Image 1 (cartoon, rainbow, N blue to C red):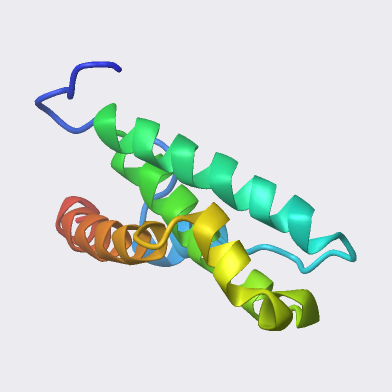
Image 2: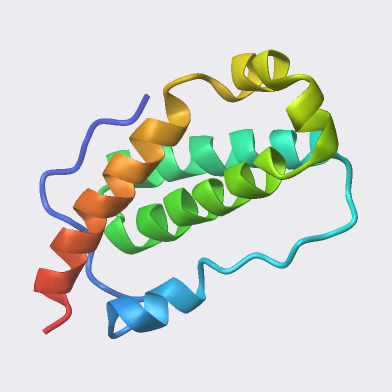
Length: 114
């Protein structure tokens, strides 16, 4: 596991939170719920790595994408039939952590985009 950097990385993706939010959008695809779940896990892992690397912009985008994919999964009929199963795979605390980190990063980035 990489050591946590002490200073956030320079801003390089966007010039405002509004622009950054455009990068978080995901188009709903006709793919299986299993594929969405696998994607969500990869996105969350990447977001955690970016957070540890102090790349606030990329971490924010990835956490927001995770929340978006999670919400897409929740709307699927097979999710409604097997909620416990999908929650066990996705991790019961990941969605909470993703939302909290996205909010924290959002506040930090608002201060930095001046």
